[in-house]
Image 1 (cartoon, rainbow, N blue to C red):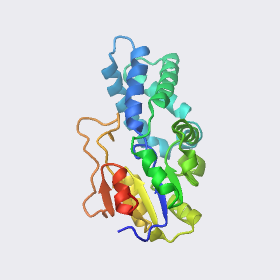
Image 2 (image 1 turned 90 degrees about the vertical axis):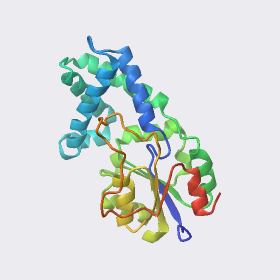
Image 3 (image 1 turned 120 degrees about the vertical axis):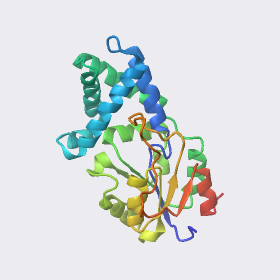
Length: 253
């Protein structure tokens, strides 16, 4: 199925590492250590989620975007400030303590999925490998350093460094050009249909959609559903529940 593939790009968060698991654990620890007055941890989580849904919907189309690209701490602080406003307790000092605690604990909790290193070890000598990941430049570089995975990749396309991210077609074209391959010779492996899979398909790449049970953002509400292919949307070449399955598909197991 993937005999023509000559280069592979991975998404990072919730593809190679459990970002949302780390986020949820860090959030609850930060909220427990720095509580809002008369509000329990779960109420703070709900307020954070509501504030996040609002902030994330506007950040890329507002003055916040260039700030977000350069420095994740500034937008993280704004997120905490909005959460406290949502609770009716505006308090910039508390927002700063929460932001710092959350950022530190998220990094401490971040871990690779157990199947990540065995897969990278198998693929490293066979294909040029790259990362295409959204997020602030400093946060994404910190994740790569904390996870100690930078040496596995020859190419890095980070939203905060490039100035735009997935699903912008230009990031796929630049990544494709870097490996000197034709579109159908490049494989994208990611957890997001909308950001990783669909745009890669539209770029003419091969695609493997990894779907993990842990891939649930803390910002979802009770009505949220697991991401599915929209009606009429193109299908990936394969769907898997773990990275090891990729080795079988590539004939490298």
